[in-house]
Image (tube, rainbow, N blue to C red; front, side, top):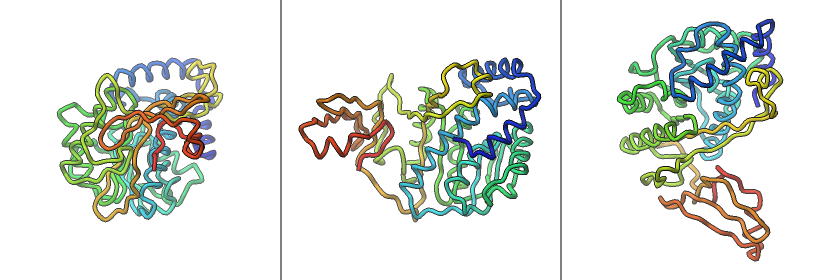
Length: 321
């Protein structure tokens, strides 16, 4: 799902490097992230190469899916500036530029110099949307305040970097910087969802209007051990498969997210969201829905032909009008 030119640039970055060593670094990196640790492990070019092959395609796929949903639900929103907070190699900025090509100013903020160097390299080497022609790259910790304002603020896979006591102040700092829409994305794990849930609650107190994935402004109805997350399938390229010692040519990136808008951003509302795998057989379609501040099960019988036909292709993560 990465833009072709970006794939080619990543391939150039890893050309001539030991695939065995990249695979070892990739395994170490994956284990590090599974344990919820920070990106400070990315400390040299081999770490960067492993990240580009193993994580960037997946985080781009999830971020692009989220931003596409935001664009669908706020169709008149046309950001002119974006802030990519905790930017890493600039993944969210690439996804934002693909979603809104007319963004004029892109600011990438991260504390890891290795990431920011590759962000500079990728934007200088790749034929890219105008939005990425001259990004403003800032070496700075995400938790430091205040942040420069932008109408689109994204923190993708960044809240995990925060100590628990810093999460709410960081979210509020991001909201203060946002003049339009704020998007927060985390790994689709129970811990990642809890960070999103806490961020959502803090934003509601500030008067934020939830765009997605929630179809309501009420308290989150998810009850442990369940958690709200979604899945995006993406293809694995050859080097990606080698780095992960994978045999399956695709992977499913699980993610949790929340998008919130300021007053003045027009939002198209919907009734419910599918928050689990869809059950299908000849007799019925079974949907697990977040609807009206509750988790509900809706069964659509095949004898209800019109309704059954309308929902035939519905998937986990889709909105229900």
